[in-house]
Length: 467
Image (tube, rainbow, N blue to C red; front, side):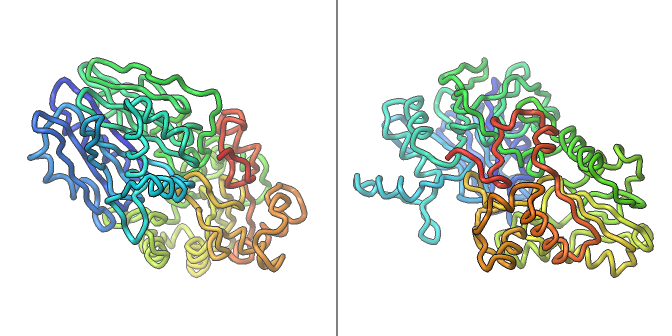
């Protein structure tokens, strides 16, 4: 997915930029980047963070970096920030999101005899494509407006200029941006969890399509927010850090409510409740409290060297990470009826291995309660579950097994309570070798988040969402 952080300060901002960007490391493990502006111009550093943590790669940069304006990014796609020379001046830019019409934008640029300098494996850097759109206009404000009009999918961005930082949330607000403030400094961030330890308070959540301009003295709105909001519901279910808030709603509180909703509809008997670390924990605590069952940890996560498992690009590496980072506690497994809460079941490969290990260690029963509905549709707007291959989404694998192809009767399979939906869930349960499997209902998930459904993107579950 990725995350952005920018800071404008009366004093040197490098330390704030370094730690503020690092607080987005849960959103990606591919590349990290920083850029600062000072009297010498723009300084930049980009590092591959697939095999090491952000802090270890960038610690050495702190001695040579200085400046009062800076932007940073954790990216799971292209190397960023980019430094662009243009008629608007030299500026730095970082982006997050997914541009679904990138090929069309590139072809249009080629027809104008434009060119792109940053390609990898024949793929144009989407951040460079965004920068080119900005440079087609006579001001940064108009250029950013051009991006929001032209891009399909989602694109939130920060632009570092001589005078300050432009921050723009994507047109439908699928990815968040929020302003933090303390005396003498302002920041803009994808995650509010970056603020407390920098001594900042949350000052403003940007609305969909809103554009603001930040300096050390304050921020001003350059484009008002639109009325249409489609914020990604998966932020609360999985992506978000427990200490963060989106639209003023705390991630951990929402996960607790998700777990409680699962518990209210459940009548299975279990000896204890557990969460698949880490994002399943908040859901499990909510379930356990609602059911008055003990919360236990039959798995513990070994965090010193193993990153989050869904981030590595190769499936074999994801499987290895998932297997190695969870260590079973045999005394809490043997002879027990275990109920696990998980954020979601995407492919199911890793979870199947985990379940098998539980039975190997003597579990009597293993029940699974995902905190969201079955993922039936691949994400069209961010970089999650983007493949349509039946080798990916567990639900689509079962649909192919039942129908001979993986894209038939999708609306029926997505609708809770239909015969096809029940058959799909049973097929996933058998594949996982679970004692029982019950998914969250979409209406319960929406209620747990606390926003009207029309202000959430729920495309992964029901296929609804505006491009």
